[in-house]
Length: 210
Length: 90
Image (cartoon, rainbow over all chains, first blue to last red; front, side):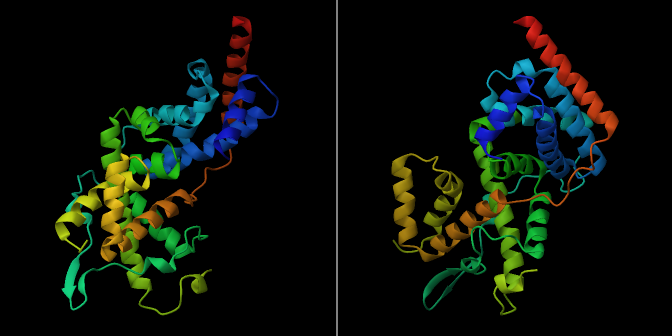
């Protein structure tokens, strides 16, 4: 659902239109569940967070001054509900990753300096992910330290702006940018390892679909 | 511009902001000039750009279980209260 349809849905919900309630619940429940599942790694917690978020959202809908901001607003409520669970992520321990750790190895040969990375040109932009690549992406996101993961989910998976993400997570925009960059670089590094391993086989990725 | 690990490191540090169009025009042009003359960086930028594209097309594997009648009832009651308090306020 694009931003405009989300805004219309929130406005319809506020007007009390029949049908808007079920559509709103179905759509945002799945979104909040996805976020909290990636954040805490427990299905049961994620379902509770989704329910608590929607309940709190309905109880405090007056705080949403502009339906255009519904997605950011819901995620702000979800972030707080997630924190209330007070459980640490089961996925990855919290730690800082330096940029150096995320840079590719390089070597000098006769043609100049080269970096050691997989052949990404064989990977289309909008590929319907094959299940192995999808699992690799899932693992790469889950293995991010929590502080990077929350930023990557909001900025890249949920496509919220830097300012919205900073507001939800109560961080400065500079911290959001730094964590997003390191998070992306870490995901890139994991996907690169996956691609390097699969490219040892000669068949193109698309041919190995399904 | 020849590949210089020093320059590349500076470029690497700014790549997300570059891809997100969040850099001032001068910094953006400087990165583009560097990338144009540095094939390792060009290759790396492409891999990061595709990483972001893959994240944007991410579809979760896990979906919530169907909403129970009790949970739905609780949410609907909260929604109806919200609508009622809005109409009584206007």
